[in-house]
Figure 1 (cartoon, rainbow, N blue to C red):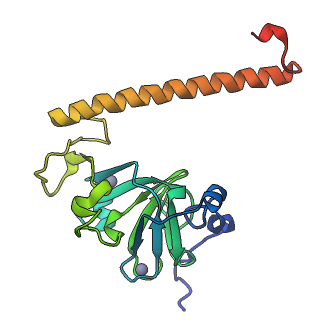
Figure 2 (figure 1 turned 90 degrees about the vertical axis):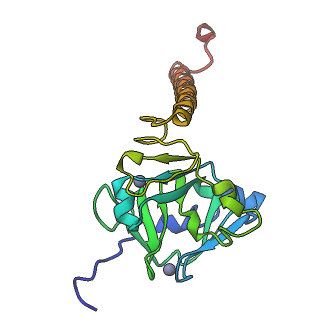
Length: 226
Ligand SMILES: [Zn+2]
Ligand SMILES: [Zn+2]
């Protein structure tokens, strides 16, 4: 073996004990019923999914074009505990775009260690799965017209290299940013509304935590806390 063979550092042994490499404690209890199954090009990596994606997108950014050698990327967003890598999880390649290194630092790109198919972008809580790997995609049945994995929009369309003539909203930047048509303008309003709600929820939670911390400091439950 040549000495300069890139190593596949995987110092994070805890990786294989949590989703998507192992079932979460919750799913161990409630059960994981595979709704979809999938595999990489060589079949070494197999996975199952127990939920419909939260959203799906076509991304025309330059990074996706470089990484996939394709005009654009199709990705579906799932909570990590809805995805379970069944086989091949000990022979994966990880790439941190931030560090420009093959290392397991979230977020990172995850691909098969044998055939190099990109499986997903693994984030802290969510995974961006490549739906093209799912069994039965494009066939009749629940995945006809891509089923729930159908992309809801195009993003980074400003760097599009292969124009797509469909009825999906198109954004120049990420979803909600720089709407390029009327449908995208409508969707941008929804995104803004949801972001505001999320922001308010976050603020509320922070305030509650602050109050709890104060209470604990003062010995808890004092009457003038009301
Ligand atoms: Zn493979
Ligand atoms: Zn992209």
